[in-house]
Image: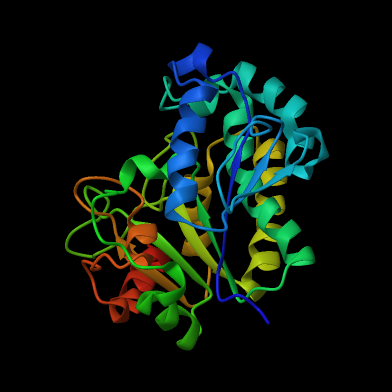
Length: 276
């Protein structure tokens, strides 16, 4: 029997502490809380979680070098020597492995597609627990009315969207995110994909990575998702990012009230696809 939704994440030690002060131990602490919020959480890791003990968690050890995404590491290092980003201080451009791990989210989903039986998959960042109020009475993901809507109405994808300062008037257009800007319109903190959409988006990610390298441009998966949805005709559901923090999609799936009814997603899709 298929599970309605498989929840997964990843934790790789990128020596991020030397760039922005965030240690692997800090992420392990956040991950413990995340695993308690999402029972049965699957965690891909590079050995960082060898000593992690959380009931119900499933840790899958994998070397970054085994991932197709990381075959772009050396070409990316060469690219970033000359690339002049708009967001000069963003970690995307100072730590090459950072954005590659973000793109690997889709490759890891594809690995689970080959090995597990499920109807849909939910990515949550390992540190998403810091955006979820543990004092609130959240429900089980498997009892989620929003999840049932996504499955019953045959949505292919679900994302969090931030329209604050990301919408033009009067045309109601969502602007394109320029390469090098790290502009955050579509969030990668948590996202949902129906089973038959996983291979589709993973193949598209591969094309996108090759295209960026060949064009000598670079940016993270949030900029990619804005481009992907601007050219996609697949049914996509959106939740508006709350004023306080990201991770809204995960919270709505746990029972938080969405700020915008799901029926407005068709209108948001048109805004994203608008061309001059």
